[in-house]
Length: 250
Image (tube, rainbow, N blue to C red; front, side):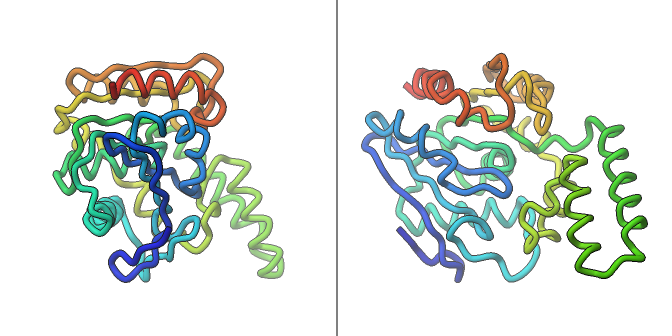
């Protein structure tokens, strides 16, 4: 389905029956990332998943956005589809950061929150980030004498090799730069709703240490670390994740 929200054509799905649950995908992803999880939960809940602006089948913003703009967009989307009484928000990776900003600032509301390998912690692992910036700068200098098309191709490979998502959505590079500098720990500390945190033990993008930090910030939150799981935990360990989510929501 499609709907126009804030002048942006937005693609979304709404399936199942029961209390409403909103699912927010991560950077460079789309609502399709939740297909297997939705199949497991649709008998008990109404599941609403959307392509955030710039991803999947939704239009890109006309200017760089940060977490504030994405959170505001989610609130406008919920109003447009007449679904403001949410039982829960489920956010994966950057979708978790958007959920934390939206709920922590009161832009939108929900009774419960589920964070799957959530991002949003920017002031930890500084040594790694410093190394990434240095490697990126080195890659830029090394490719400078080459033709521009070759530069772009090699720089893209270099960024991917060092773990940066800058080129995952090339048309949103300025938005990416804004988002990765926006920390949501203060937002997390404002949340008093029940919260389930699920992280993978082998996740290098959002390490399980992030889950420990959020567990301490969010009163009454529960943390589950799934052994052997990496970043896309809801895809690789769907049965385990869906069981944890369903039990938590019920």
